[in-house]
Image 1 (cartoon, helix red, strand yellow):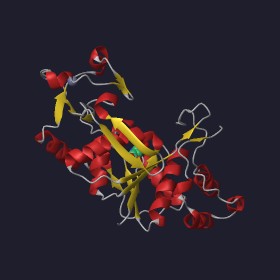
Image 2 (cartoon, rainbow, N blue to C red):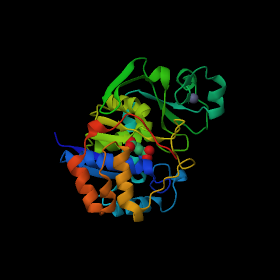
Image 3 (cartoon, rainbow, N blue to C red):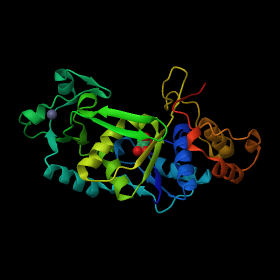
Image 4 (spheres, rainbow, N blue to C red):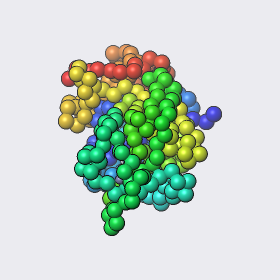
Length: 296
Ligand code: GLU
Ligand code: ZN
């Protein structure tokens, strides 16, 4: 089977160490499987976007020696495709409009899921408010969605009990990541997804959408994300490890070390091409750990 992988950064700031690790892992998996590697800018959430970040990310990727196949795609240009798939789901009666505010949901919601209050299906069972902005939610089902992750092993989730009817299009008109990522992965023919394990709990939602829309489910590989000793994700607030193209060799080396590839120390003294050459020749997904803590 042809391999098409991808790296899908959100341009909410410059590339950080966690996204570099995801880029490195997805790239090495694609290239060592003689596959293609695509870059997709997930600039869906324009209010959260930082001006210039998309170009800066592409610049940094280039400086690190990444070479992508095909032109970079931008989610901000794909609204028609998202709308079309949402219409399909409307026609299938799989989605319903919702006019609840965050506050209203918090007030009536009895159950908490892994992402906060589980939506109590108010608008599925009652009339929606007139003249109110409408969000679109998908009906979830009370059964386990299970998949085999190449690093994390078997993972399962009951969407109805753990997530609830989730939003595909927000009341402000923005499409949700969950819908956009499924539509784009399918449109680009992505066969293998390698990304951070912070997205592991999103994957059942994406598989569910693929099933509803009759799309193929790609193979999933969730690599560890960097956490501190307390197990907290290293985010912009906590992360000391910025990415600096001036230090590309050492940071590529650190990414390989983070992924337990055990790069030889003297590689740090060499150049970028030597580091990539070693990585291409020695990359082994089986060495990648499920979780990884780093001291900062
Ligand atoms: N854009 C997402 C992020 O930067 C990644 C989406 C994905 O790989 O599916 O967290
Ligand atoms: Zn509602």
